Length: 239
Image (cartoon, rainbow, N blue to C red):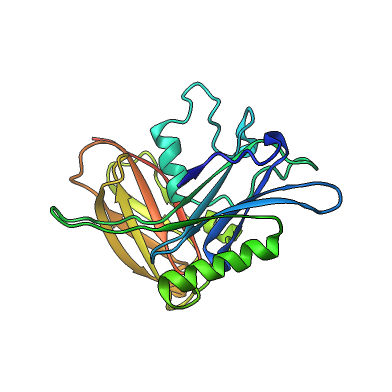
């Protein structure tokens, strides 16, 4: 769900997220603290992603939709499969922002279907926005949500090398002992071509050897996901 927030004054917005309610939200506030708050909340099970975009030249370090490629397919996939918890925070009053709230990936068999549900909220205080989200989730699911993990810098520690590669890779990152982490290799269209289950092994510094030989040369996306992190990045496979 992509939302180009323009609340009251478009260039005075800030975007954040509430992991405990599976919701990304935007706020417009004035000096007194009054304002208006809008949110998009995930109601159905699955990984919860929030990517907040700064709609300014350069993107303030995030996806830049004003570069030569515009909001490219690769940019869109990044915003649907990685996390950026805030936007508009580089200035006191905020700036023009947008936000993507997403879930997945899903493998959908031929003839099958899945249902993904979102709730959209608008309120005059953060407390009432949160109460509205609780009410919507309770009505849809019969219980309150299990909190999504807080986003931490640890999610950025994963890397694969060498990149470009001819298929023999090393995957390295931080995993808690006993935590299960999944590695996926996907096409740029999001189709999974390899999926591996990994376990934290402190004795070998959380380093895993992967053999992707036999796949066609080209540009792929690799993703690792666990209980407390998700990271997606590009991988180039050579002949």
